[in-house]
Image 1 (cartoon, one colour):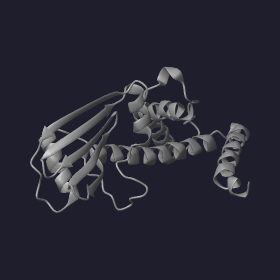
Image 2 (tube, rainbow, N blue to C red; image 1 turned 180 degrees about the horizontal axis):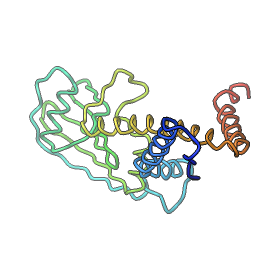
Image 3 (cartoon, rainbow, N blue to C red; image 1 turned 45 degrees about the vertical axis):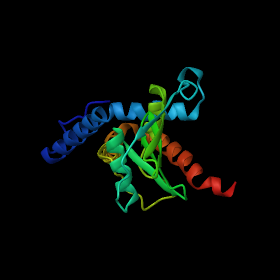
Image 4 (cartoon, rainbow, N blue to C red; image 1 turned 180 degrees about the vertical axis):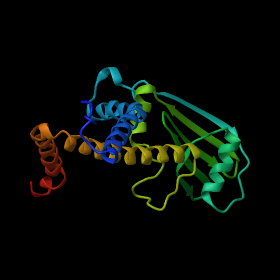
Length: 218
């Protein structure tokens, strides 16, 4: 990045240029690891590289445990009570109540781990199936992990770590908007090299516009 010549500008403009540069640098450094995480996980989602295989190497365990069926009327509260009894932590992805013999089922999701629980309300026995994946699987999950499902828009995040992760992703999105905005300002300030900046911006707009708008006509 070229240093900004501050000798030929007024103090307010000089301060603005300095502030813009610092914001660009510090935002880039703060979000560096987040961006790498999404870049690596995006590559894993886009390619089936053998070294990053995780599903074939998953670890699956099954167990049974006696529980006390909660009296709560809300499925989420029942699931949370049973999770406490079973020493589970994570986001409740879905719940279901099956017809007699009465069964209550739910899934607990967290990056790298999926737990399916089936509770026989009459026998007070919970059957727990747990699947764990390796670090590559965790990377892939973090790329799409939101704690909500597209077909259940009213669902709310119920695990504090999911809420923290969601907040971090919101902060990353806002930070990227600011990072790009500061890049535009820096490009404008390079008055002697506008042509290259305009070409790069034009290619970016054209490529993005093709996928956003052009595909609907193909």
